Image (cartoon, rainbow, N blue to C red; front, side):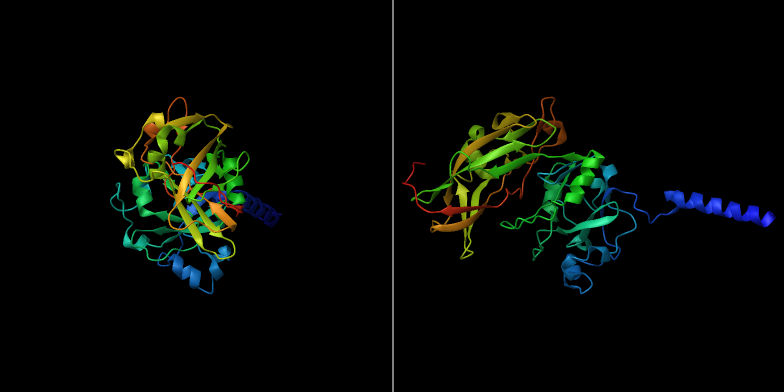
Length: 351
């Protein structure tokens, strides 16, 4: 009888342990997290060229560090359009060394991989890059300049491969998890719009195109508006579209008219009169003109894509108001790739 009671006691004890996740440290504890690798000597190049990780498609083979670098507990919200992570604390808590405007990673962080996970499952890989990085790898990068120059509460990554419409940061499982956690913000979606007018190429190498700004966020957001800045200021932050010929693969780049006139104190530039408030769900369209840098693209079929950038040194005390917040994006914030046909050239247009 005594043995029977002892057996029952052991079974009950084991059952309690199994049902108690705190007894199993390997059980995923973080719905969203960013991890480093267990082997801290590996670079993004190492895991790209290793037979163990064929182009990092076998994400389950990646051995993650015991503890994550950043989790959902560190995040105020994640803005999907910009892939800006708005942190609850300053970035200096997450980066080693001297933190400042022109921050530099320690040498051991150059090309260091990081892994975005949901519920302990790796979803995609990125890496840290610096001004001295020689190679560009086909993965999102966190650049040292963007760490220092961005507001102290914003961590961002970049996908710099224009024309590639497979930005791996747009992972549906990551999005689903952020929504479930209440951390998802849609941000501002910018697209090249041809609903009311086609994209026009003029005989003087001028390109005319329309951008649509859509507020997909729960917040009301102020956007940098070319109708208010004038093309001198808007052109400083934004180039015109890139076109790639489908057949020849040749690229034709453009710049917005009067491009390059920097506003005073351009890194810290901020003028409320440059912005238009878009309430949640609202959209506006703006028609712009750009000039091709070299030759005019010949008639044919093209991929077309452009970026939308804004002044970015807007700390939270300036950026967040009782009417809405100001959109911050500097770097690569590309529109989706469109396919267009250039079948004729329009007559020369005035600047």
